[in-house]
Picture 1: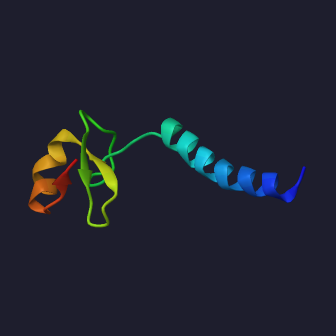
Picture 2: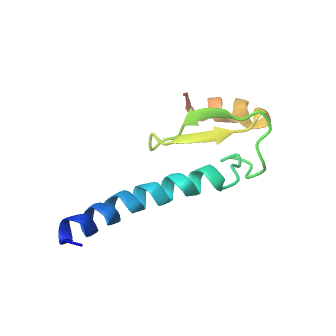
Length: 68
C-alpha cells in the first residue's frame, strides 16, 4: 500500500468514525442534559446544530438561539 492510500484512509476514517459515533450515541438536550422529548434543532453561539427538548425551548429562545 502506498503512502497516498494511508493518508486517504486516515482522513476518511476519522470523518467516518465521527459520523458513526453520532448515529449511535444517545442524544440529549443541551440545556437540561436529559433525554430528548420531541427534540427541536437550534444553532448555538458557535453555529453548531444542537438539540433542545420541548420543555427547554422557551429558554433556548430567550438565549437567542436560532431555530434550524
